[in-house]
Amino acid sequence: MVVYPGRGDARRAMTLLWRAPGAAPRAAAGRRPELTVDLVVETAVAVADAEGMEALSMRAVGERLGRTAMSLYTYVASKNELVELMYDHVFGEPADAAEADGSPHWRTAAQAWAERLWDFYLRHPWTLEVSTARPVLGPNEYRLFEALAAVLHRAGLPPARIRTTYGTLFNLVRGQVQVAAESRRAEAVTGIPEDAWWYERSALLEEVAPDFGARFPTLTAMERAGAFANESASEPYLEQEARETFRSGLASVLDALEARLPGPAGAGGSAGGP
Image 1: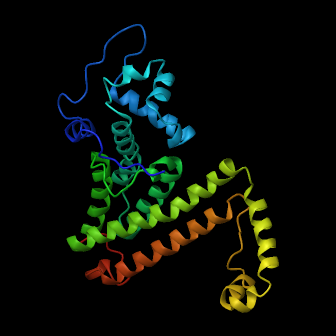
Image 2 (image 1 turned 90 degrees about the horizontal axis):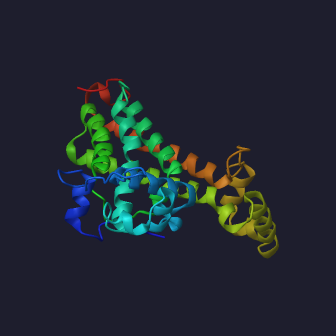
Image 3 (image 1 turned 120 degrees about the vertical axis):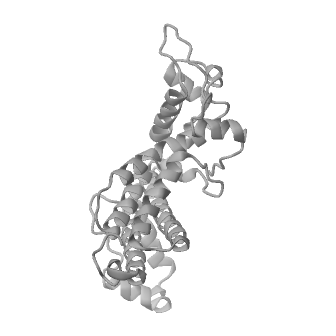
């Protein structure tokens, strides 16, 4: 399932995202707790975190709030608009952490930025279903970008390379964490435990491809060397592999970046800025 933001009224959505003056209606007092845009969004996030994007609906959010779906439309005009608000709202988590990061070295800060983004996606896996082809353009997305851009700027990276480095790191995290998130969810959706799936398929592979070793000698040598071993008893194999690939890719990107940086920040130096 892929959700494309930006399909509702652009002015209304952007006004709500940025909480511009007059963006939200005044909450009506009554016996029940007052409704606000923030309360609707936070409740919707709770639904998506617990049950996934497929369970998200205005009715489901209304039920959690003890209200009808119709009562929510005064605050959020549509489910699509709600998803945009939810998406930017939760991105406040890694943005807050990035802004509070006091790491003196650019590389430490950049690595922490990426690691926090990885953990964020696993807390809110439904965000991976929101397409980045049409960005939400909310304040927390920009805060997350600004935090890393500031780190790279202080290290001496030119503007154009800051932009491409941000895209590289963001998509490295998102691409690999997608595998990890799907691996976590696979057993619940399919009803087949991780180990059972691998054992069954591996046994069948040996049966249907008895010449596998001859056809794929390099992969076979890698397997014998333990390259595909799962060293974690608590982490599914594909999640472990995704995490290792992410960290290896992150180290490679930062190594290449460090070698290109001017002055003491580059060439293995330890300066945090000019």
